[in-house]
Length: 138
Image 1 (tube, helix red, strand yellow):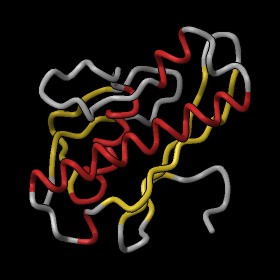
Image 2 (cartoon, rainbow, N blue to C red):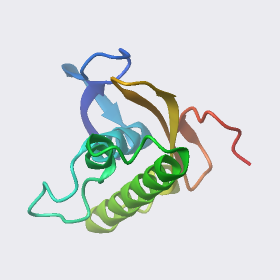
Image 3 (cartoon, helix red, strand yellow):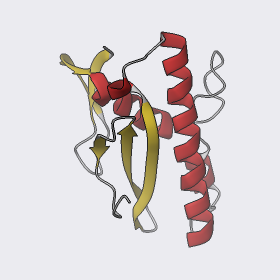
C-alpha cells in the first residue's frame, strides 16, 4: 500500500500545508501525488521527465484565457499527470487495482484576472473516485 505525508489542499485561495503528523494512504496518496504533479512545472525534475505539466506556464503567458485553449491545456495536463502516475505504478510494481489510476480529470471552475481555480478528480481501475468532477462522469 502506498503512503506518504499528508498535504492539505482544502483551504481555497491559500497555500497548501504539510501535516507531518498525518499520513495519506492507498488511492488517496495517488490522488495527492496527482495534485502535486499538476502544480509542478514540466521539466523541473531532472530525474523524471514525465513529472509536471505546462499548465501554469500556459497561464502566465495568457494561454488559459480563451475557453478552447483552456480546455486543451487542462486536458493535456490531466493526461500528462495520468502518464506520470502510471509510470510510478510501473516503477513501484503496483498491482492492486484500488491503487492503479484509470483517469485524471481537470476542469476549470473559476477564472478571473488574479487566478484560475481548477477542480481535479482521480478514478482508479475499480472506478472509485477521489475528488469531485464539476460535470457528471458517464
